[in-house]
Amino acid sequence: MGAPRRRCRMLLAAMLMAFTGVSARLAHLQLLAPEAHAERGMAQRLRTVELPAQRGSLFDRNGNELAMSVPQQTVWADPKLVVDRAAAAARLAPVLDMEEADLLERLGNGNSRFVYLARQVDGARGDAVEALDLDGIHLRAEPRRFRPAGALAAGVLGDVDVDGEGVSGLERRYDERLSGDPGELLVERGADGGTIAGGEQRLRPAVRGDDLVLTLD
Figure: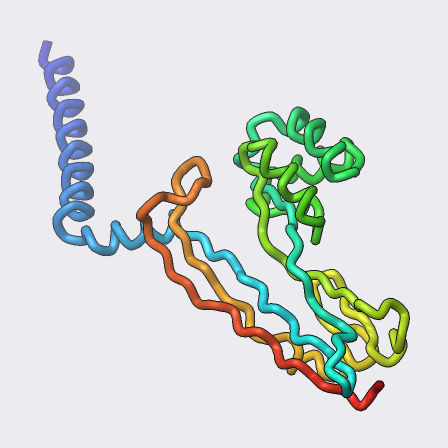
């Protein structure tokens, strides 16, 4: 009889020690370090969204615009929030004029919280995507470079890549001045990825790049 009682007392003592340890940890979190605990929780809910700066325009000597940036819509996804990836790909494919298999592959990147689906689509396509109201599918404004005069002086003006960085001609030579300074929006998101109404928000506006007036006619 003595041995079972000793084992029972030892088990009760071990359980008491474990309970005491858990209680002490809870007391530390709730009483001794509540601010640090709250800050860690807030950091997990905050997400930074980059706000692209509008690139400066190129003008001829008469004030006519030779190269300009026009706002477009970029479609992106948070794969972790897409409930049915196959269904989402099937509904997006005809709207974006893309292969369903390609979209499904991009949505299958479960280790990422941000993947591009289509860059710089026109307003009509952007509105159509928004109308689908798919979980985890989002839009962001992103400028696209246009040359109103078409191929006129294209070799001199140069070009930009999909990220708006100058890669040739004057676009590359004066890229730093034309690029501007991207802004930043810090938003608080809930577990479903949606922005919390009335939650934490901090905005640093983007600064537009400089315009350049050329000696071209």
